[in-house]
Image (cartoon, rainbow, N blue to C red; front, side):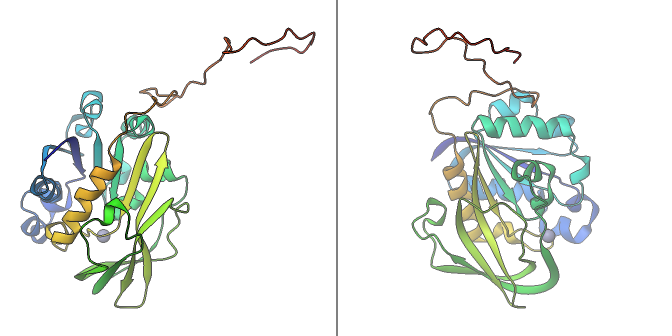
Length: 261
Ligand code: ZN
């Protein structure tokens, strides 16, 4: 059992607009992800979607969220910049963020990475083999050396992200491409994990290994009770700290230098 408070965010458009996808994910992609987390003992899982007020990500919801998972695809541009800034600030403050599949092109991931986050892709029902390349990492706990997904959308290198601080999975695809499919980053006090699987036309979020990885990733990304992030602000304009009072005495200087800061 886990007391971590998880919010599962989903764009939730494909499932409503396409009958086939709605059939695969009758409770939405968010519903399937939340169900998988509950299976793994998370008792405080809530969901939020794009069309809710403030995309379901009010300041109150984010303040009560230890780890946020993010799935989006066709409506990245409809996510308000104000909410993106709010999520970014919470990540810097220490909230964990798990970015899934096509979330690579979301505003929040691009903002946190500072790169295009673009990649190669192909829809050809290919087999994917995900190799664990950090077998001692908490996100790999309970996995075999590799696992496979029978039919997926391919994502291929070059994936334009900063060098991950830790790489947990590398994918091989039937068509010959490879991809860094499990990437760890930190920004401020927050931990970020990008996980590749999860195209909307496949039942990926019902797969037992995928569900295990997501549960492990949520545990890994949970906030740590260390020193507070000193530059937090809810509106995304981060304050510098004028440290006028020094801890130790500073000898008086005869400098005529102007101080304009
Ligand atoms: Zn996709």
